[in-house]
Length: 523
Image (cartoon, rainbow, N blue to C red; front, side, top):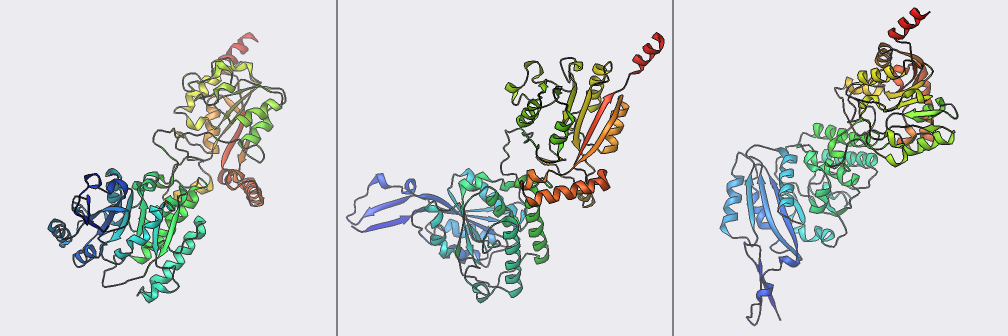
């Protein structure tokens, strides 16, 4: 039997057998096909938009598709021409034509289209440029890896065929720039793509839902940022060779600015791995319902806040730990024969902590039992999270003024660390999920400011040390991290104010004025 398939503007497909029998059960095949959106980003495309629409295949195997044109506030007749052909019914597929009230630029226009695809429950998005530079005839070929579940994104690459882009009319300077930038991006990101800069792209809508593309730039390097997001999310990218065609389209990209934007955003993504910079669009794991403060791993086997604090605690001491600490650090204290009387602000790992200390409110009641029960009080990476460190220290002082034998150990980030200084020099002050500028930090300190705060509230500093960058935590326990750690420790010896990543302070309470007056009168 022969089958005749016609696709109407409703998006439904009727199947008629040659015998003339119509089966209503098969009135719509889209229930059995993938729904795809062919999304055309258009700006001043009145000379090409009609031809481009007519070049789109009338049928794509296994796909029920629609076309969306978003005119980015063009001043020409792009929108009118698109609307005219849409309403004429000449083409056998639905066409929706929209026009932005204000120019959103290349990246911003894509964001609107992808949101449209998500909200209208499409499964695949095909990105086409309105200038006709990329061949819509190749859609059936490039969409196959998505239909077969072999990829989450498919890129048409002009660079897979040796010198094919040059033969297709790509200017030499663009060809060389593409090659150099792609090699740089592959090196930084650990990828092996032939081209980062093709605008012919096919995305799984499920993949788009996993990445925060809405936070990307509105500029032309949006395409690079979305690749970085796919890589960070460990989504599969497939490349297929396509021919290059350069016609009379007008290039609206400033090549020098574009190159600097590409280099900058790629380096920022790399630096974010090490908590040096932070950009929300590269925080793939973030969820709106998750707390920003996260658990920190113990840093015991190299110079760090944990190893220094562990070293300061005498064997067999009674230790009061204000704030939470990694379970491994607590186990290391127990291994020294210490008795733990810790505290936990958030109830995290509360089962391993004494009941009377769980869930304290540090601001109102830093510790619910007399501090004189302890020999050592640990305040590790706590004070920077408080709204009022002054009130916190005042309450502790009032509790311990009668016992000056208690050793206090405090650590906090050094906001005067050299990288923070360099960022300020560049006009940057970026909070993130880790590091000195953690999003949960409310107060920041230097060596001099923490020293002044402690002395003002009646404490005497007995030891002050600079803590190096936790390179092994970022790079792993290897030769490179050990060398960097040694270099950082040497630099701290030169200037701990500049090269210390964190501040380490040991201190004790001094007698209060009331205590001194009473002692003087008694004597």
